[in-house]
Image (tube, rainbow, N blue to C red; front, side, top):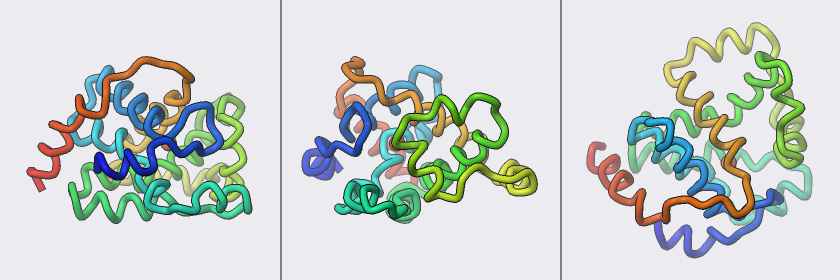
Length: 175
Ligand code: FE
């Protein structure tokens, strides 16, 4: 995993931070809110699919949805199980949910998130939002989404990757 970050972590993806900065900011926000270890690890690795999918940036430019949340979640499920994988799997749908449910949310999204929203299906309609609320990891997915949205601050200080590795190993061991 450290190798994966070393290989792909400096990839820009159209936001004001690169992948590793984004991942560390997201995990730092989760930790600051006292999230469970599995959710901190989910925050750290929620965009793993972007790093596994080498062409994510070009897919985005070409106007395709790279389905990074599914690719990432499948891998995370093998490594850690559903407590890490499910919030990651749902974090894109959580954006579509918040667009439907929270006034002003859509307007605050970053330019990239706004652009990908249309490719991902746009805001949920009422019945879809109700079904989303019934899912087992609904709350974790929405929390993860909020950290994801906030983790795009250029120059924000975070803990280093090594700080989170004990949790990563602990969650993998619990599998
Ligand atoms: Fe993200």
